[in-house]
Length: 108
Image 1 (cartoon, rainbow, N blue to C red):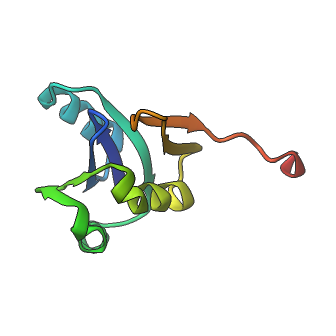
Image 2 (image 1 turned 90 degrees about the horizontal axis):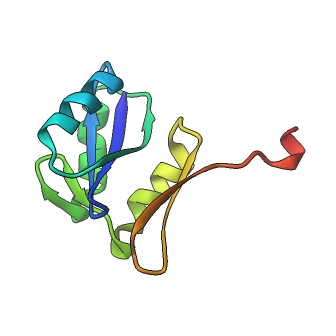
Image 3 (image 1 turned 180 degrees about the vertical axis):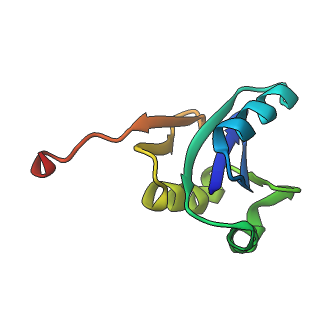
């Protein structure tokens, strides 16, 4: 699986893991900031490289990418493609926030 994890409201890690829960647990141990799973999609290590290349203009260091109004492209991708029932956006102060998607009344 390819995962998208936010750290400290200004960075997103795009990574690959066979076990996302285990990977998040190990990342939390190494991070001084809270981590938030924004979403995940099916994929392998080649797909991870593809997404790193796709979003390279927002690259910061290693597997970390900037999250800001300027890099909204990453959040749009996450919102449209991930397998989680969440939606990512910014509040009026530019702080990243994540919502649970509501069901469309037509889907009931």
